[in-house]
Amino acid sequence: MGRAESASRARRRLLLGGAVGGLVAAVAGLAVAGLAAAAVRPDSSPLTAVGATVVDRTPAALKEWAVRQFGTADKTVLMLGVVTALALVAVAAGILAVHHLPAGVAVAGGFGLLGAAAALSRPEAAWPDALPSLVGALASAGTLYLLVRALTRPRPRFRPAGAEPHGAGAMDRRGFGRLVAATLAASAGAALAGRRLGAHGSAGATASRAGFRLPRPAVPAPPVPTGADLRVPGVSAFLTPNRSFYRVDTALVVPRVDADTWQLHIHGDGVARPLTLGLRELLDRPLVEHDITLTCVSNEVGGPYTGNARWLGVRLADLLREAGVRPPSEGGPADQLVARSVDGMTTGTPVEAVMDGRAALLAVGMNGEPLPFAHGFPVRMVVPGLYGYVSACKWLRELRLTTFGAYDAYWVRRSWAARAPVKTQSRIDTPRPHAGLAPGPVAVAGVAWAQHRGIRRVEARVDGGPWHEARLAAADGDDTWRQWVWRWDAAPGRHTLEVRATDRTGAVQTGRRAGTLPDGATGWHAVTVDVGPGP
Ligand SMILES: Nc1nc2c(c(=O)[nH]1)N[C@H]1C(S)=C(S)[C@@H](COP(=O)(O)O)O[C@H]1N2
Ligand SMILES: [Mo]
Image (cartoon, rainbow, N blue to C red; front, side, top):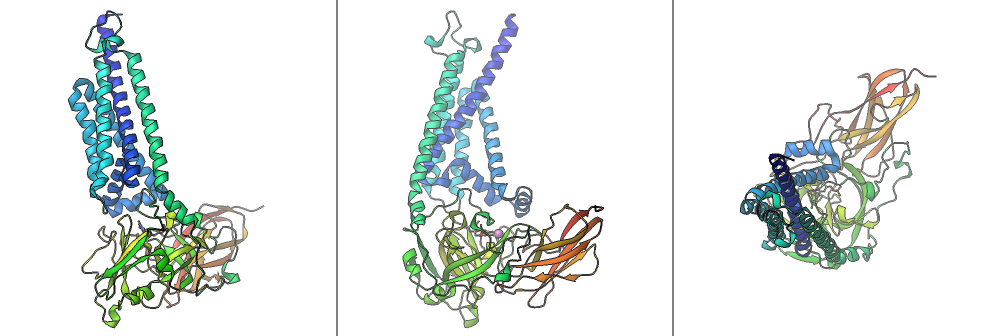
């Protein structure tokens, strides 16, 4: 082997070693940071903090695009992106360290500072949130230093006899490999410990939910009318099971709140008697049960972000009255109720809507169960007729009375409308888009919603022809969606089915297409199917 050839091979090996060292140092840093985060706060870990900061700063249009492309997997895709970026920087830092050790180590450590900055920029941040990233940065920089030094300057006992004391030719592969393996093992240990500690940290919350018996409602909801569910195959169940209920929120780590220590503060403009309540005290009040369909403003025409549940909770209006709040129509100074969650998300709801007699609830129960953690345990808001981002704050912690003029809530700061009543919408659940059908009778069916106004009529049509009135399922009040079905005599060929609803004010769902920004999509849901030539 020629001398030049062997030198270039050694050089390649050195660079590869640097890259591996960079990655391993990043893994070590993350593991140590994760362990620290488990002790401080789960979402203070650098990856989560950076991811959450990206979520917070993503422009509305990009967020809508991501939700459209990836649906509920948008968070996974985001985290994959963050991890990929980190891996690239880690490799670069490792290669740099081979050439200039202090510079590489500085990059590895400096990247950890970014995590700390991200953690501190979160809405509810306190200085301990920076700790995991700082500790992780130290671990990562230290690991990289040790690994690259071992790579470039092997200690005498690692050095094969006769090798030069410095330079690429002196690299001891086995020694380096052992060091990498030991670092990875230690990282795995730290990650495992972090996981244990995390589970221990949320054990109180888990136990408090497991031990939480839902109180009986003073005002139970009437049974769902038998005819509310048409049982047409392929149509959304009238009540959406909790496990399949859509989830939309900014939380990368689902907050697990301990119900035993949970508190709610009610204060602000025109609050004569500010209240601080624990869960027991909240539940001393009479509970009502009510069926409400919740819809996300990000739901496109025909989209999946809507679900119907039986909620159990305290009437928000009663609680506000207790605190001395008057709605604007009675001269109260506050027109906006800002709800804040434990993770700093805010929603702004018109006080008038909350106090106009509708079933605006501080909910603790969802379909006969305590709220699942993902849906806001222990207490969330639900207000019939308003999109979730202006009404349905999960993991509720604070209610503050203010004005729309004085305060913009989370999504309003990101160019969504401050006031957002749910728009009348209808959806074809069956047949599915591009379904292949046999000619003859076909059940075209789905759901329609116009929360708090109610659905009066649903019509369907084929290929832009005349509208046909669909059969409506029994109504379960005006705050829930309504199933519908229209029997179509399908002829062979490709056909487009469309649907539109009319609410109980008489307003017909507009066919004008609009995107979800700034206050909800409009247009008619259309589904194209292929009807075969028949037997
Ligand atoms: N704390 C908190 N509450 C939140 C959100 C959030 O991001 N954080 N998202 C809101 C939005 S946009 C919607 S549509 C509903 C969704 O409620 P779900 O996830 O229980 O379906 O929750 C609302 N409440
Ligand atoms: Mo939403």
